[in-house]
Image (cartoon, rainbow, N blue to C red):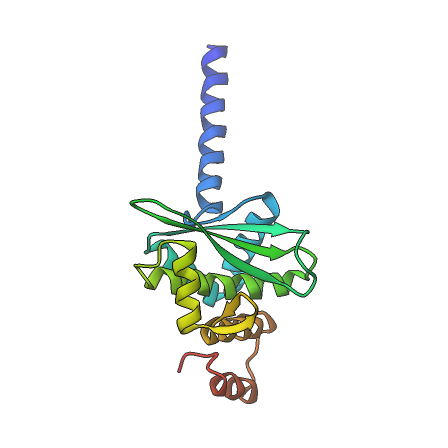
Length: 184
């Protein structure tokens, strides 16, 4: 009987752990590479409706996103998205975020980079690094020699920053509307 009680207790612990893991990984297509990036994703999903919306868009797509917090990025770069691979069922990208930035900035730039992943999700034929570059050369804003951005991602950064600040003033809301950061 003692073995059965221990076995039953072990099953309950395992079931509880699996339930926790399921909750902690509610977004199966936005994945953290390390424990800190998983915490960033969880915190971002908790604190930002915009990031929750972006994650839902990614979940409904064929894009899988790996989020990697890094210490080896240039100091002026907060984040980047790189195409990793394409299979018959999924396209995989890696978001690298500069770990030296403050947590709120990392949340805002996670939103920024997730917007790029959503742009990729909407561009079904973009399934290689070269096609990603061609896509952003055509539709993006050049910010460096071989680096591009989008107005939508820039707006997402401002929107998430406003969510983190708890922006409620009408003046800030109007400023965000003028810059395309708030849905009308």
